[in-house]
Image 1: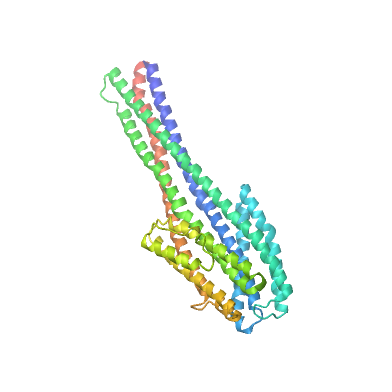
Image 2: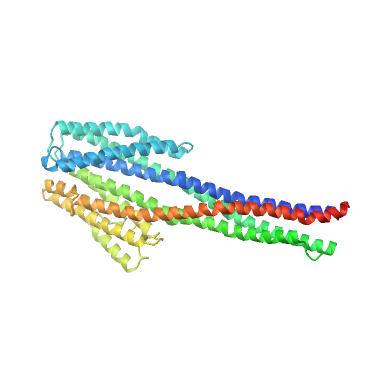
Length: 459
């Protein structure tokens, strides 16, 4: 009989230890994931998208500076472009340093980063030499010095064929690392839920069986310590049974509802910036103007995809899709980054912000057509003035407006990501100690409950 009691007790103690180990391992793993996601992986994705945008704007400002040339009427715009060029170079250098530090241990990220590092210095040399040659020649607006233009072509080709694809791979590699952590932790939490249910049921059955056996064997109605242990196990299971699903849901909200939109919209910002640079290249290099117009059209399809719509029909197709969407919010007839966002609207204020971003994007696209119409009419100077104007009604003012609107939608989702991460991490901060303490108490109560009965045999 004492041997049987010891085995009963050992079984309950073992089940308690294994159950606690499963739950606490899953919980601490989730806590570690939150720390990695918020402290490293999400910032790496945003740094990479920031690098992409800085690079696109860097090349766009180089083109703007050369478009303005030595025209005294454009000296204000030139000064603005020079300031922005310097800021973009500083931002790009900072983002590269951040990416270099955080790339350790991830081969995919390191490979993507190497492509940017290899080309960045050469690009700056080429772009700097192009601007210097153009200044020395005192070139007129949109009539660059041929030697300077040749240098710029090398610079922009390097940007478009090497640097930007490498920066995009860096975004995708960092985002893939985040996704891998998310998938792994969600799977671990799901597995832990199943084990918790099975082990918890076995432990409760074991405690009840031990209670019944003691009652029948020693003719006592109830063992208070074992009864308390049983109640505590029920509380432990209730706490774990809500914590693990809550963690999975918080991870889903943070990753898919919030951060998927942050990534899509951040990439949209970068691609719109590249499209804006294509406008400047279009005005600068008339020989390559068709190439840059095609690039602008391709960028537009990335931002809000409308299959089959050429640059001449894009505005009409987009307007029709927006009209259909406003009549029925489930009818999202455009793809691309905006399509990803409008199929993932989740949070308070997000729809209104997204609709404002889409409206300002439509206005920016219409302004682009006006620039091309002015060029077609032979009014190149007017096209430059309109395309680079930050005054209300100017194309660059429309670009800044849509960029600000995009940042508002990103902010809504970034705040939601932060709230989900803070809530998920906060749950664990106080529940892990509770779960650990409850498991220890169950072990102690089991020992306390059987000790007097074992003592009777020793007596």
